[in-house]
Image (cartoon, rainbow, N blue to C red; front, side, top):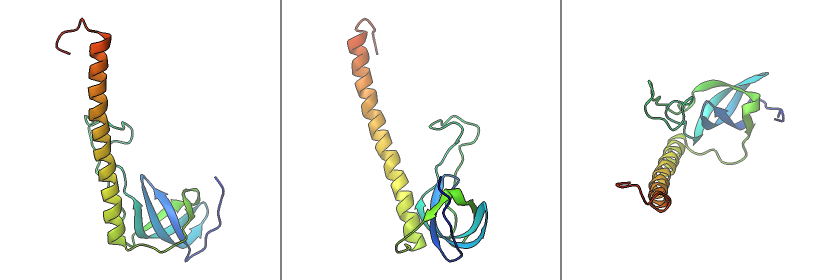
Length: 132
């Protein structure tokens, strides 16, 4: 990954844990930088990261987005320059959350349809099975 040079005051997009944020660089101390969160670009994922798509796990982790103006240390390699208007935090949080919910709902629809197709294939492949 290329090592961009950032300075205090720069706006960046930073990946932190499973979320992505628009932030202001406060300090640069390689290999990290101290950032102030300004907006949410992608809401963090939910669940057990070591067992993706599994619900029967000891702890199904709820991950909250970082707060407005929260300070966080991020590896420089997990940052890229941000050019453009910084969205208002609350609106960006709402959009990021809505986007994750829409994607999950679409996954549910896809999974339901795929299951119907597999059920039909099972009948075609194994007509001798009863009650499938």
